[in-house]
Figure 1: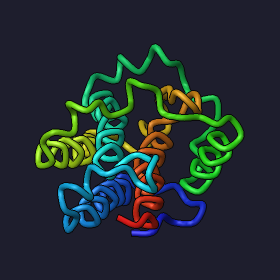
Figure 2: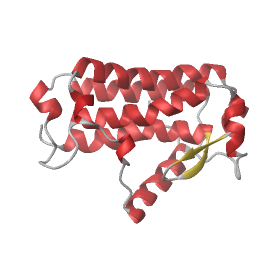
Figure 3: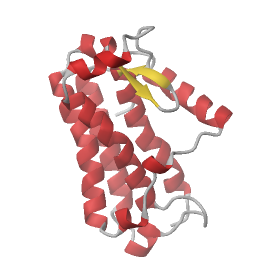
Figure 4: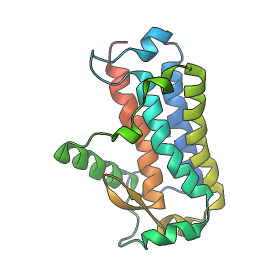
Length: 182
């Protein structure tokens, strides 16, 4: 599924996009040998395994927040503006990480012990992203635009914008992995 140009995606669109992006990463990783799976890319970049663990660690809290009570989100206030489009969120993220040299914090980075069981790692990654998609079934379109979740680099995002980020984040990490000689 390609994101719609400058339109807000529906819950069904978001669920489909999240599932497709997660499956795309796993489909890419599936034929890799275990050595290729854990080898640093281009000699010094995260391996496919490290990318998967990072994506799991970043999606897991989103899934938990979406599955939890709306009252939890009240602490973050209300949106200062309407939800931006997928394209706008992607553009802001790209600009922010480029301009500020933002890297993932240690809490969102893989530890060696996280990478010892490939099947478990792939399962965690898929469960986290599927969990985000599944949790959306309990939300309304208005609620996606009426609650805020803080993002460590982008600041407050509406729930819809956080879902856009979560879907794009997989693509952001898959793109250089695809280009790297594995």
